[in-house]
Image (cartoon, rainbow, N blue to C red; front, side, top):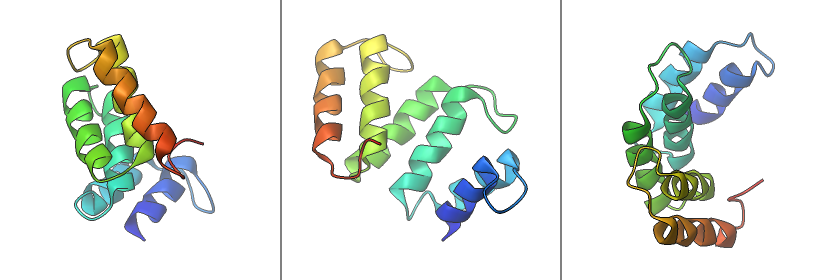
Length: 109
């Protein structure tokens, strides 16, 4: 529920948009919900909610969420490897994560 509430705050769905509240809910839910961890990582990656962009921390969180089965995290981590953003550039590793993302039924929208 915390992750979903975070999404509502981030997007302004049914409540006033507030990225800082979204971040708060994502952080609280990150230990229990890989999607919350992925959303938190995305906020770090893109410097949302007043955060300084931190690609290395974002990649670490994406990896954790990907290892927990989150397809969006697999996709984002794969792209980071292909581009060498926050991790050493490694196209083979990137494609490996992208292929895993494709295999997750709800992984990519």
